[in-house]
View: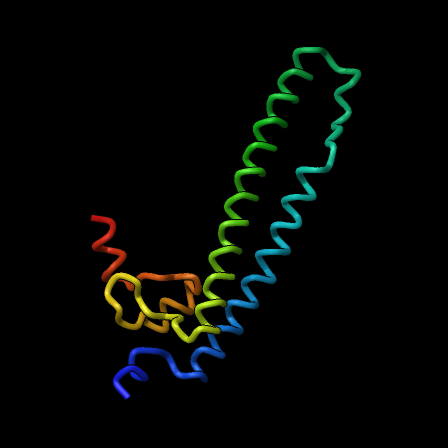
Length: 127
């Protein structure tokens, strides 16, 4: 019985599962848009402008593509974290702080559904 109190109820886990699935769908949609923007060949019509303007345009485009690629990598990591959280829901270990072994507050999990640390453990880690 003591083991049962160290985890969230099936009803709570179902709520978290819905939140996580919603976040995954949204994140995958965002990732798809980022990938589409990376594969799109931008042509701003600089072919007939001065070479120096075209060089600046190309440099700006490269920087923008690099930033977009970094965002895509971050989005992939976020999706992986959410999918790992989903596995924890299925295993009924979701919401247990890996630092303290206590339950992470529901409010925190609703805001950061992939959290694996309670606020207390997170603060200790950041010291």
